[in-house]
Image 1 (tube, rainbow, N blue to C red):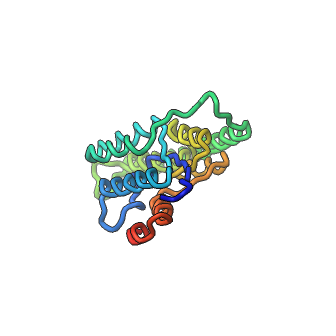
Image 2 (cartoon, one colour):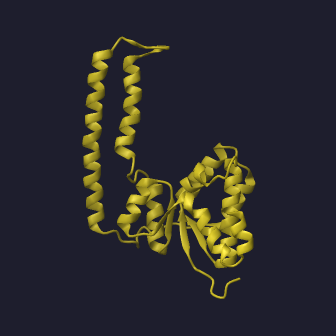
Image 3 (cartoon, rainbow, N blue to C red):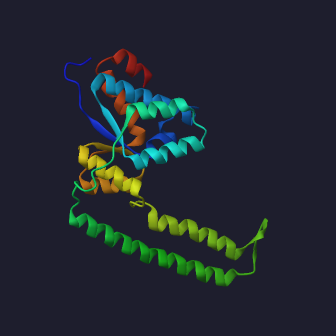
Length: 224
């Protein structure tokens, strides 16, 4: 063990565990989660690197893992090695400029969403009563509505904070002076605005291996 243990802190997003980017070769979701949690536990024991999640993220991730029939072993290791902590909502201050920026951005996105809707209405009017080739049960209007939902969702939600879970993640990271680990571009954008350190989820396992290799290079660099 090193003489001066590091005291890095990271707040982890759901996307870190679910992204295929952390999987090696044909590794499935469960194996990837076990490998990641193994790295997290070693980093905690060797370098005092602590990983956190707000309760909302922990609940979201647990539900998603259970829906994918992930074993209890993964959930137990998650509860053991990732600290669940509520963010101090009433203590952490957010600059007014960031709130104004968020309001302006959402107003602009609503306008863009309306333009998407207008385009879809015109297209539906032009093509109503026609059926989609190879889908007798789906009219062209149904197809337009389906496309509208996808495009509208992307226009309003992509690259922006769109849930309390995302906000909890940032507030907790600011409170702890911790790095944010996520694959979500909206969280990354706001982490930059908050002045927070952040790391793409796919780069987190290699980072932990490098920390561990400082203490035991023969073992950890061989695994990476």
